[in-house]
Image (cartoon, rainbow, N blue to C red; front, side, top):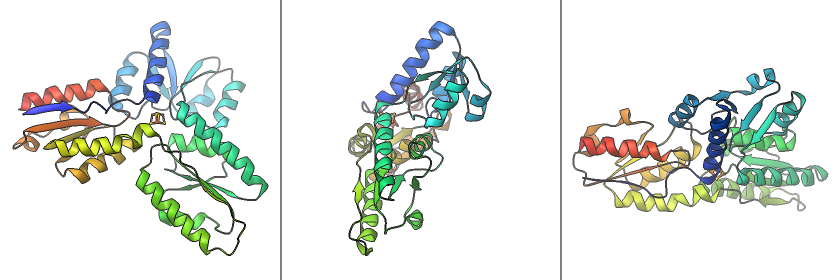
Length: 290
Ligand code: SF4
């Protein structure tokens, strides 16, 4: 049985940058606070915890003063920067450049729409750290839409700019924007501006077609990801659609030998938050089973 790791899977540049920044500070200082899980992968978080990284939440941040705190790739709303300034907290900003650009775009769109009483829509998951950072650019006025049902919150007689969380599925974003377009057209106001902004991260959407090919090329697919990773869930669905012998796991102990009975090739792949070392451990474990 041949067991291979997908060469395109593993950390995206945004995650690599945040982890490198954390590691270089940990090398020098031995301890560092990070606001939220540095990456949606428990195994990698555990590894960095052992090196001195302390994960804190926003409540903890309120209690801190005169220290350094890392901002992870997902970015933060303006309120986090304001609080840190007040409490003399030095923020080490590892926000991904793709997310920062999107925050900037949303802020600009919000300012324009304020003039004409329009609405900013963010297609994403409520409570997800990136979405919280994006909504923060609009004075918390943006409407978060996750499903078609959420469109009930939108007033289709007013102008709309829509933006997507960077890691959403291109197909799901296309579907929701088409449905909004349909409803806007039904409105009787000819002055409505409806602008769809293409804000999906190519690091994720570019992986989908490659993963589909990889899923077809192998008898069994082992998809490795933390359970909280949005792009992990999305990319796994693509694998499963192509190859029904696909399995989602987060660690070696979730492997089941029965999955490999008739397999000649096993492909291991993962999300943008899946460390290479974890996929290599899983490769070794499957080779042992074989
Ligand atoms: S998935 Fe894209 S937007 Fe998100 S951290 Fe990685 S590079 Fe940045």
